Length: 72
Image (cartoon, rainbow, N blue to C red; front, side):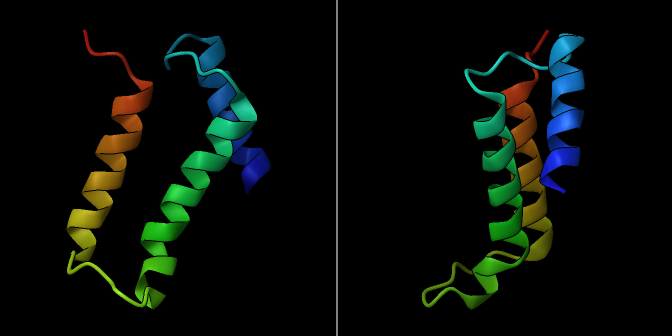
């Protein structure tokens, strides 16, 4: 999964669809870990935030796309 995400990101960076990042491997892992936390690990958090699934999903998507895509 990590390799597939990295290939996807690399293709987008090469086509200049995404802003450049200092390190592709670090960016790939950051995105994967962000998604995994909000999709899985937060449910076992000892002190969870009361955030519904729809809000969590929308926030992660907005955060990642906002970090990668430059606004016109």
